[in-house]
Length: 104
Image 1 (tube, rainbow, N blue to C red):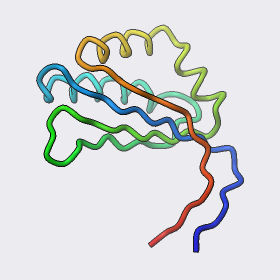
Image 2 (image 1 turned 90 degrees about the horizontal axis):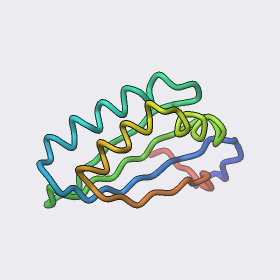
Image 3 (image 1 turned 30 degrees about the vertical axis):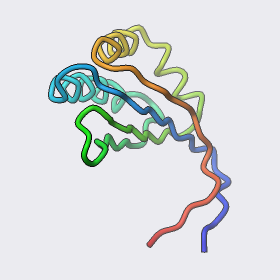
């Protein structure tokens, strides 16, 4: 049965539509992810490509708290990574708080 989650972890979700070569987008994303991995409060991420579509990606990143995520996003180096990704894709994003979780 799912449990209500009460900790301060936040989940940052990006959905990308890629307008260029998928390999180029994945390289740019890997550079951005390397920056994020070095940031205080970063926990982990998963970048997934939609089955049957080479232009649709979903990133799910877990952070210790929203302050850590926001501090990383304000870093000028991060803004360079955002610009590189914007040149290759459009995106929708949001910050989510876990409500329920279940392990298989």
